[in-house]
Length: 243
Image 1 (tube, rainbow, N blue to C red):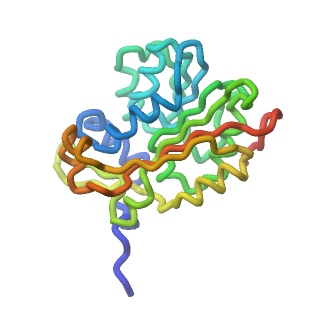
Image 2 (spheres, rainbow, N blue to C red):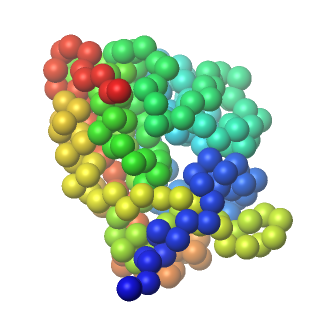
């Protein structure tokens, strides 16, 4: 029997992994984050006055920035460790923090948000259909400029045996976090089945400019690291409901 691909050799579950990772998540020089953040800012657009749901918010790196820019932000995550870090950041008092597992229907009102953001989360989601249906349910329709913005580690990274991982802050051990080998087609079809129209899709490689910002990008030069998607709800009703 062939060796199991590295991305399937799970050492810790997703919640446990992110609880541990939270101590160094914002400071470990992750090239994916350096590549992703300006892309998210462009797709979100001017945040002031918007109601934004940050689904899988982690340490609040997007949520607090958007709140400080004048958005009304609701941020959802199931990692208490990540949320504890988020609540200590400047601007955290302006964010509504919700502890919730994304495997279940979101505890958020239908058609309530101008922007729904899901950043670097989908490679941990088994049921993409269910989550995309929830995006479609809570976002306002396209006629009201409602948008869904998604970033995810490019599936090409998993083909290289790369998945979410970090060095444990106490032991220095390389810890791999439970991940799912979703493909681009999984995301595209999940969006279509949820009634979301894709308005933007881009793939971003690790280049010399990124390597100059963070040395960890050097090993991935020339490879696509990041997939970005922008979507809008095509129907005027409240969209499909998962579950």
